[in-house]
Amino acid sequence: MMKGRDGYKMGYNAQIGVDSKHKFIIYNEIINEANDIGSLERNVITQIKETRIKPKRVITDKGYNVINQIKNLETNDFDCYISQFKEEKNRVEYIYDEENDCFSCPKYKIFTNTEKTKIDKANEYKLYRSNDYSDCKDCENFKKCKRDKKGVVTIHQNTEYKFIDEFKTKMKTEKAKKFIGIRKTIVEHVFGNLKYQIGRVGFTIKGIKNVQTVFDIFEISYNVKHLCNLEIFDRTIITQQLEIYFNSK
Image 1 (cartoon, rainbow, N blue to C red):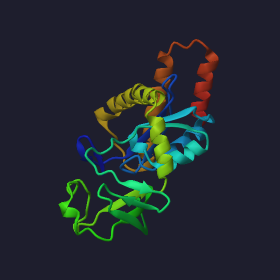
Image 2 (tube, one colour):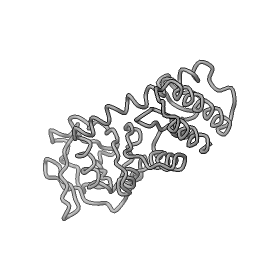
Image 3 (tube, rainbow, N blue to C red):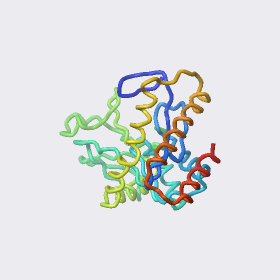
Image 4 (spheres, rainbow, N blue to C red):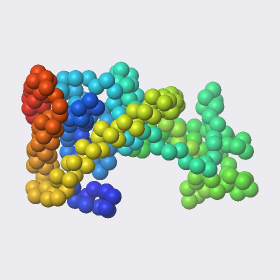
């Protein structure tokens, strides 16, 4: 079961990569996962295997915003531009003391490291809690603090918090904003065309391998049609595109 804009449906998650110059689909994969978490590195590796070309940059939407995968790619000289989640409004700002490994709230309540961790959406978090919450109800920020049913406030700090700060700074640059804006013109119209072709009839077969085969056919038809529509008169380019594509299938 997959959740989409129209609610839950029986189906699979289709992953595609598109080149920014000519807007060809350079790889695709049908997966069982309901979301894109965990697909970023796999997609980049798949693209390199199928085309034997390392991408100059990797641009995705926020569904792929898994920080450990982004860090792995950036460490290996991939220039990544990943849309960021909007920061929560009216939230309490906790100050981190790196030397003592603890947080403090606006009322100077100290939250110490519990030595416990939590994995959420492929990210690892360290957990920080206070020893006393008895005076929290008198605080003007009481309703803003996220607490469990027992009234306990737990601060989650991503273990890659330093890299997160660096990457957020990168994504606030004009260059990053430009690439994120361009992404919509590269990928979204391709998905629109595929949904128009597939959506009219849907898939009449079952099983992820069979669906993958049919989706490959849709990809081939899209790329060949797109290639014929391009005003490319260099036969070498056309031949290279066809060889790269069909040799990968």
